[in-house]
Length: 136
Image (cartoon, rainbow, N blue to C red; front, top):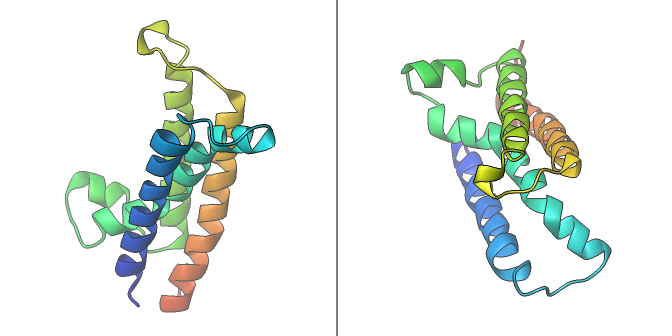
C-alpha cells in the first residue's frame, strides 16, 4: 500500500478515535480512576501522533508555501515537521492559560503530546524506510 493511502487511513482512524473519546466516552463518564486520566490525555497523545501522517497526506505532491515547509521526503524533513508540530502544540496548551478561551492548562497534555510526537517520528520513519529505503 502506498504511504499516502496509509497516512490517510491512520489520520481518519485517529480522528474518529479522538472524537469518540471526546464526545462519547468522556461526557458519559463511562470509566473511573486511571482509565479516566488516560481518557483525559488520549486526545493529545493520539492527535500529536497524527501530525506527520496528516502532513504527508495533505501536503505530499503540492508546491505552495506551506506544502514546501511540511514536505516529508527525508528524515530531516520529518524532524522539522515533528518539531514544528510540537512547538504548535505547546503554544496551543499555553494559550489555554488565557481565561477567555475557557479551557484548562495541563502539563500532562504537553508530556503526552511529546510522547505521541516522538512515537510518531519513529513509526513514520520506519514506514518511509519500508517504501523508500534510501533516506538522508
